[in-house]
Each structure stands twice: as C-alpha cells, then as structure tokens.
Length: 368
Image (cartoon, rainbow, N blue to C red):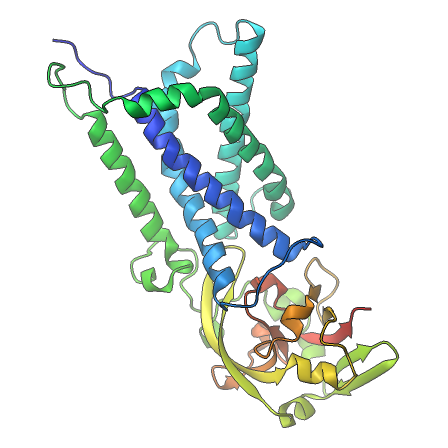
C-alpha cells in the first residue's frame, strides 16, 4: 500500500488561506496606524469608541505574530518544490520564481522586524517605521500576485480531501495532524504574546514584551532622561504657552491646576502593540483654546520640551482637539504625573497612538 506524504497542495492551500487572512489584517491595521500618524486629506479617523486604536493596533500585532507559525508551515509544505529543476527555465517560470523569492523575502523581513519592534530591540541599522511601511507594499503586492498566479491550484486543492483516503496507509502523523498542530501553534503563539495588547491575557502571556507595569502602572517608551527634559520640566520658570495668530496666553502649572478639571478613563496604546488604561485628570484642551479665541474647526500643533525629534511636534486634528475627552493632563490615577509620563503636563486624547500623545508640553499652537 502506498504511503502518503505530509506535504501537499491540500496542506499548503489551507495554511496559505489562513496566512493570507492574517497578512491582510496585518496590512490593513498597519496602514490605519500609518495614516493616523501621517494623515492624508481624504483620511478620517473618529474619536469614538475611545479604545478603537487600541483594538486596531493590538489586532495588527496579534495577526503579525499569528502569521509567523503559518509562514513556517507553509514554507515547510512547499520546501522541496522551491528547489525543483530547472530553477528558472523559460521566461514565465523565471518570473514566477522571482515573484516567490520576493514574496518569501519580504514576508520574512516584515514579520521578523515587526517582532523585534514589539520588543524594542533595534539591532538593524535603519529606521524601523519607514522600512516597515515601505516593505509592507512589497509584501502585500507579492501576496496578491502569488494568489493570482496560484488561484486555480488553490481552488482545486481546497476542493480535495485533506487525506488520501482509507486505502492509503498513514505511517505516523497525517496531514490532518499537521493542520491541527498548525492551528494549535498559532493559538499558543498568540496567547503567550498578546497580553501586551489584550489586558485579559496578561497573566498567561509569558512572552509579552510589555506587562503593563511601569511608573503609576503605565509602561514608559521614552524616559525624561532620554528626552533630555528633566531640568526644563522641573524649572520654576516653566510655562505652557497657547497661541492663535497674534493672541497668546501662558500658564503656570498652578494656574492650569486652578482651572476646572475633567477626569476621564482612557487607554494609551503604542505602535509596538502594548496598551494600558488609566484615569487621567486635567484641563479640557478646547477650554484652553477658547482662551485665545481659537475656532473649534482648527487643527492644533503640540510642541514638547524634548529636543527636536520625529515626535517632539505633532498635529492634533480638529475633531480630536474639540473633543471633550481630550485633555492637557496633569494627573494620572489621582496622582501628579510622573516625570517619565510627561510632567508637568501632557496630551491625552481618545483613539490616538501613544507616540502622538505628546509629553512634556511647552507650547500649543493653533494651525492657521
């Protein structure tokens, strides 16, 4: 009796479909994060629900991690075919082989650098965000081309039984066993790492780079020491200046604290995938903007004490600037902001990435 191989199009197609879904979700949610940070005129991002960015970025990280075991199994299932002779042959086969090379290389690059980013381990010599964004189009383009070329094979394989039938002797594990093992590995990889994005899983996410701990219960990506703001933040001369055209107002910390305060429970979610929730207290931003006669339809530039860097200046869209839950926060969980969390004051707004929640604010400018 013949013996079936564990490899085959039946396994490849099923794992490939799951991998394609994971990559599609990862690309879409990553694109959302990019557009929030680098908005285009046509892009619109809501302020509700307040946990929306936490959800999309958590889904981005979880789908990326889930794709890793799927990619490993898919490569294993086609490994002998990758080296079939002739390697290139005619022009059509050469193009197909080159497209597969681009697909595999871009997928490995995206998933490996993304995983390193969640751990903030930047062993590569390039700016992660720029490279990850650029290669995402290479990867998704290669996936689309691969699906287009292989669609007839995929359809046929999905219509075939997974195993070859009772007449074929199964010496050891079956293809069904391979698939079950694959789904289990995806589940385990997700659970042990997703806790940084899904608080309910933190107790079992033993490999999550961020557990939610840090000063005042919130992780810190960039400390006051790294930002070089300690002296300026603690200076008695500190003022928060709000400007609109020719009008300007400056506030001491005491003056900000004397203004009507609002308290809201808002999540803070970082691009690396971790998120945490806290109770924030401070002055509603729109109240400060009203002090200089700003229109509620104006975008606002937030400027940090931090020396010039990619996120020392950010622009807050008008819909977020006028939202009643957008605060210039002075307290977190009932206590004065820790220096690493942005003392003397910081921005906290719903549905915004952590890198855009500007810390150590020194100036707020209404964009003309």
